[in-house]
Every structure is written in C-alpha cells, then in structure tokens.
Image (cartoon, rainbow, N blue to C red; front, top):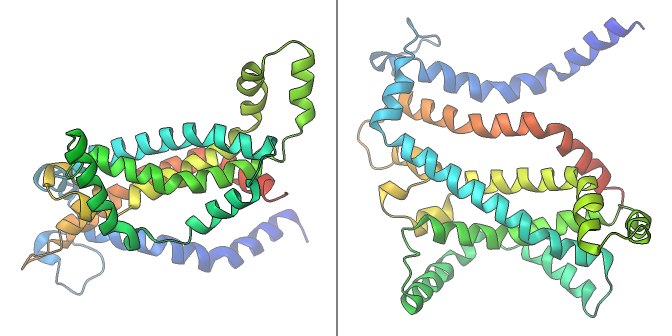
Length: 279
C-alpha cells in the first residue's frame, strides 16, 4: 500500500473522532454568530453572521475583567506551583530518606480527594487566616490562587519526580567532577533535560486553574473578582431570558488560550508523557 493510500485510510479511521471533537466548537461558533432574533429558530446556519456579538459580549457582560482575572490566577498558580514542586520532586528522585515511600503514597492519595469535599473547610480556613493576620482572602484572587497552588502541588511533585528519576545521575556526577556546584548542575545540566516534564506539569496546572469552578464559586462573590467559569455561568444562571449567542461567544473565547497553549507545547507534552511513563 502506498504512503498516500495509507494516509487516506488513517484519516478515514480518525474522521469520527475528529467530528466528535470539533462538533461542540462548531455549535458554539454558529450559535455565537446568530442574530438575537434567530436564537429560537430551527435553522442551523444563521441568515447572516453577526461578528459583533463577540464585541458586545466582551463590552457588556464583564467578560474582559473575568478574562484578566483568570489569566492572573492561572499564570501565578502555574509558575509558583512548578517552582515549589521542582526542589521537592528533585529530592524525591535523588535522595533516600525516612518515610520517602510513605510520602510518595501520600501525594498519590491526596489526588483522590475532590476539592468540593473540602471547599467549606477551606472557606473557614481562609476566614480564620484573614482575621488573624488582617488579610482579605475571601473575595480575593490571592486567596483562590493560594488554594489552587495547594491542590496542584501534590500532582506537580508526583509528575516531576517520575520524570526526574529517568534522567541518569551520571550526568550530574560528571558536572561535579568538572567543578560545577550542585546548584549550577541543577540549573545548567538537570533542568534543561527536564523541560518536557516541566512543560507537561505547567500545562495541566494551567488548565486545572483555568477551568476550576467549585472553589471559585465558594470563595468569590463579587463580580469584579469573578474568573471566566463564574462569568460564563453568570450569563445563564438566574435569568429569565438567556442570550445564547453571547453565552456561546464567551465559551468559545474562553477555550482559545487553552487551545493555543496546548498547540504550542504539544511536543513537550508528548515527550514528557512518553518518557515519564518509562519508569
């Protein structure tokens, strides 16, 4: 079988998956482009494409501030989580100490707890910390970010230490023989080799923080500090008339950063998942 025929056959086999994947996005786009008077019509394609729905959605539904809030929370969560997880994962993969195995099991078990189970306890905790230290953690992006970091840290450490263990220790020892300090070896030799794992961890952390809803719903009550999931739901909840074109436009725009990030870092994602699974 020629290479062209093989490619056509593979695309035919993959076509159902492609259709199922793209169908929700097609529905969002078509609905977002519909005029308001055609929302309840049975026609699939709008009589005219109203690109102004995106502008109206952005300016009249507080979508812009929510987008900025989500970007801030997700980026800060991702950066701080990875920075804190790197030394912990390095210690787990390179050093032997008491209760090391128990600590690894603790990291795994902690991922079995859903945030919704702990959300009320976390609310009380933030209130107590805020009262004790004079901080505003409720209705604050910093409070939500702190919780996101805490929930993602165990997963990040687990992912990174699995990959770190696949990097030969001989490379570090060779750098030590050449006179490099442990810190210089970590920064110049070890971490460049671990970029795929850090990219995978950063992607999953960013996506988790970007899409999180339950904690944000509990901790954030003022619209000016809403994140994107809260703002999109706010366009639907408690309304007599739902403007679905604006809702779908908001949902579509909310997925763009994740799609761009995933496309940009997909080579690191595949390498990190493949090599991290070797151990």
